[in-house]
Length: 150
Length: 391
Image 1: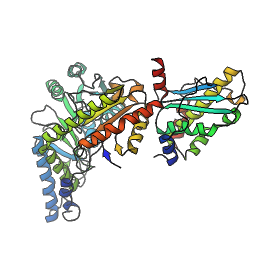
Image 2: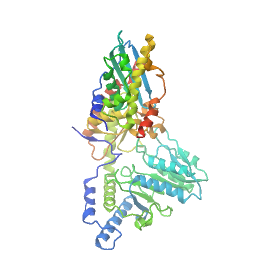
Image 3: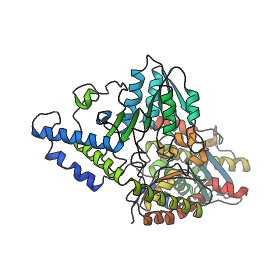
Image 4: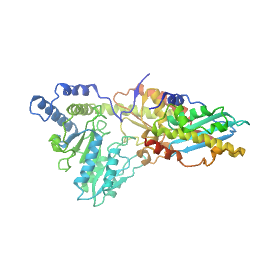
């Protein structure tokens, strides 16, 4: 049911952990739906992601999506990281079953929420975060329903 | 790598003796049981022999047993059939919140047709309270359906008491005994039950075969119209090999019942005690005494069930979970919700069910493999981090 890449990231997740005094921290999901993702960022003065860590409560694909997303943005600029889409996460994982697409959405959202936190703390503005609400409830599941139909 | 199958409540391997009993009925004695020539008669004999044998083990009459394609079909037939047959008498059905989906969804289908269904609560161990059954009865109640043993948390329901209440009020009583057959003694002459559902593949028989027991005198409409098979109630050429295998499986289960229960109960307790000793912050679900002999159901705080299953699978261990991710929906299993577990606890559920081919070494292997898996997943969990930080 899962690709080898998913299983690899689930078995040997990259960048698990926390960052003390993180530049930004974001958490999305809730216990009710069974997935929570938290991402910590360390961003330097040139707005480059120097370090990134995650903690995830959820299924195999939620762990794998968090893991690969952290790899995909490590060393990138904040601007570049904001371009990351859930589809890129799915593709990088070699695909996810339809009912698990929401895990990739969570990874994208968790990263955005962490950058949002950084932007708030440092008084920075990113047009990519326009309209982004880190506390939005369960948006990713509506998307899942739609995708799940196919 | 060691392979440990611990999902016997999902399905069981077909026992060698069962398979052997079935084999002649595929290519040699392949006749249609309705034909009058000798191969047909052979098939008919095998079919009726199987029916008589199962009836004998369960202490009922052969003509009270109707073979079906399995448990779900028998549940649907019982519930929808009784509703249909007795709708002039009333439109109210009583069941519980922890039934198998074959019962719950059949009841939901009937609600769309105007029937009223009461879904009784259960206590924190999953027990239905017989007095709550009685309190729910109205002058419109035509059917009560309460399962014998819950498939998820293994709780054994007070079927005899509920049956007496149903009988006192002249209400038909159905019980899904799919998990009970082979795990406790069933005496249909003693039990006040009108309809009972059975399945072969949970007791080391083949998949695709089950039966519905219908007490003599209970009127039930035909399930499939057609030929005269199953006394015209369920037409269609019989699955002779499957039914022969089913009968063999019931025979073996009855013969070996005492050993089976003693052996499984001892391994189950060893497993539960071992888990409680080695892993902190866990919760055993269900009743510790009134319990399926092979059922171990445990919830691990802070982590999610599918992650546990995947990790166990990598170590060759097969189990199941009631988490949302494994149920294919967004909610954890209805059974875990009904016993009052919070979403955070229910998502971290693991069901390991032991059976006749489980060994002490298998139990030890799981007890050795599971703690580091739980530890690894907890270290990855933001909930664990939060809880530990708060302490």
